[in-house]
Image (cartoon, rainbow, N blue to C red):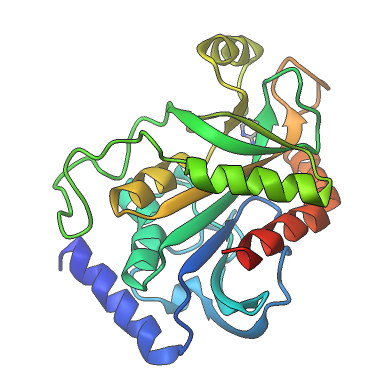
Length: 272
Ligand code: HPA
């Protein structure tokens, strides 16, 4: 079976079960899966129900897709995502994004937790990703091109929609919510970076560091989805802040800021 056939089979499975056909998807990052859990008319699909969908690892929380209404608009909400450091292949990481495309999704909002490198950033700040630097040593487009989905050599010139970012900034202003814009550098993880790496990344022009999102953006842009990505600065990157830097710190910050994130996401969906 080809990758396209696997995707088509998964899409058929979902269409046969669910009536909702959203055009917008939201992916919730580390520790954020409680955000927006009160969707109206929610229909849920555990990842393990969906044919060929990546299985959650032992360490990762079981993920699910929720189809429901937010601000009277149908959306697909992914609670959780799969990461390179968990051992997934790039095809597996791209699978949910490509499946979204086959289901009729046109635009995706990706959220994540990230370490702040830019010295203007404080823990708890939100940052729109303006561009990225990729250090993950693989990507979902390597190998035979899925030409039904997109071109062999896609560009990443407006990977993070300038139009949509402008709107997000306007909304944040109205909500009285600070929203920076910055460059995200993706690392393979799972270890946090060394202080020397962070200093090097800062000189390269990175404002934020994290272990996700970029492979998904590559897959999304290949198949023509419009992307908005929002990072929450959950900690200052290695060598810049506290000397603990733990996953607990990351989760603590997301917990503290999830209401504000929900407000922002709600408003973004409302204005589509
Ligand atoms: N580094 C990499 N990934 C992260 C960090 C970090 O400091 N914080 C949250 N995700």
